[in-house]
Image 1 (cartoon, rainbow, N blue to C red):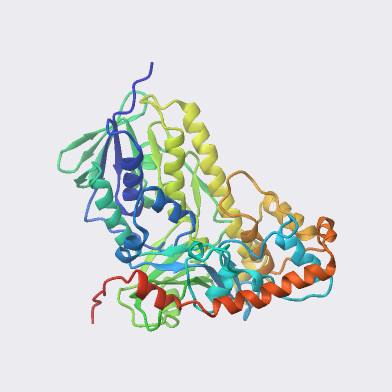
Image 2 (image 1 turned 30 degrees about the vertical axis):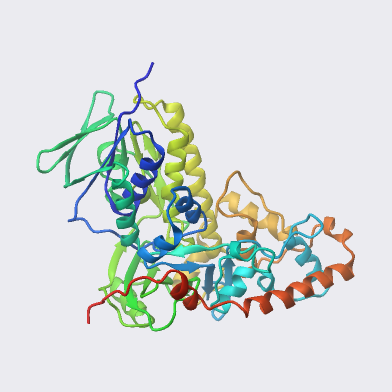
Length: 504
């Protein structure tokens, strides 16, 4: 009989390390000791400050008060993503969270919208999306606080300060027994099987463990440097390989969406928190220099910069094994996909969800790690394909970057998915995927994929009834949204963050 895991060691802090510590300290029995090693000398990347709706589910499962969390992390609310200049310059579209319209006669709203289009109704799809309507007008209300209203089917996520999230989760985890060790990892000890047996710090301390989590970021000290696990390179499909990040003062109330505007050699983001905004430019170093990228970003940001621009090189891809032997890589150590759909934090808690599901004994049975790697690999591939979707459908050819984007390879599975959708709006959906039908429909529509026809299953609804139903939504949704508080008003009333003093 295998021995149980008695000691779990997390290498690295930051958002990844402390999120793992918080989750494990909440769910694991107290008989398993959880320790975390981090050094104040190593900074946090902090590029990803935007989340997706499942993040709120995690907060609730941990028993964290949402209002307190928003206040403590300078948080603001996110109803979706606003994309500009992606298909063509001058065009924009939204990827909203939650439903679009509602089921009619048991069938998906999108098919009814397609039928209305075939009948001559040219009303845009997003007119029926409550999250988009709120986002456009900078309005906000918690959808679950407005049942039986036109916005009840919307969803939302958060914009957060990543460094404050790490501090909050550190307090949470330490209050539940996690032990923190300050120090730099100098050596990784391994036994005869190649399993990691201990981490030696540069001051001579030795931290023994049965199971190790590699949260050391792009350095990947355990999974790559010690265990030699390889990397699947997706940089041919996604050409961007660097990012510039800078924080600025807010000059207006924060908008309730992430802003992603395509640029000549990539795209820039704006993520507004309560008292500052995160800005960045994700770009291809083959098409623009760091200096040019910094100048481009600084020429477009709103508000005074309060930090120096930080350059972050990256390689898009994932580990060939995210869990190898007795080491599970998490966050940047396990892979990276550019933050176009705000999935970095999501992948951290997904890895903990699967680790708890397949939690091993001290021998780390390979059947468990094999299943873990299969499930996490599927998650990474799904997200990668969804991000590629934003690029591969572009009609832009105005710069060398966009011409190279058009020539970039697209996987057979994604080509088939696009072709299937282009026929009658059908989607090939997998098991437990992050991006559901409304997400694919929104991006496909925004990038110009118009299905040739609708599914005849929706034809059983009388045309007059369909027209009346759609007309009612078009009237009721904006009328209700107009009564809501602005996003800024909602934050100031319900979860105001403390003022942050920024350097003069």
